[in-house]
Length: 183
Image (cartoon, rainbow, N blue to C red):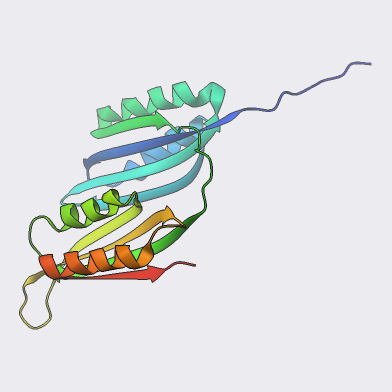
C-alpha cells in the first residue's frame, strides 16, 4: 500500500503597483504574468490619469512562486511599465472598528487633502480608499475639488468630537465635509 500525501500549498499575497504611459495591452501584460505564475488576481484599482495608466493590485500566489512572479513583473520595464511589488504583511490583531464614507466638495485650492488627512491622522483614523476629482461649478465654471474616502477607526472613538473638528476644518478651508455610515 502506497500512500500519497499532498502537503497543502502555502499561499501568500503580493501587492503590486505600476505606472506607465497609457496604451492598449498594459492590463493584459500584467494579467498574463500573474496567470503564468498561477496567481489569482484578487483586488485592484486601476486608472488613467494625465496620459499615464496606474494601478494597484493584490494577487494571491503559491509561496514557492512568489519570488519568480515578482521577478517576472520587473521585466515589464521593457514595455515602459514601472512595477513595485511587495509581499503583504501579516494582519494585525482585529480590533472592533467602524467604517464611514467621508465626502468633500469645495472650490479647489492647494492644501485640502493635507488639512483633512492631518485631522484624520491626528485621531488615528485610517484612510482605506481615497478618490478625488476636479469638476467645474455649474454656474461659474470654477474648478471644484471633490473627494470621497472610506475611513476606518476604532469603535470607541469620540465621534461627536471628531465631527465637530471636521466641521471646524470645513469652515476654515471652505469645503463641505460629510460623514456617511457604511453600516
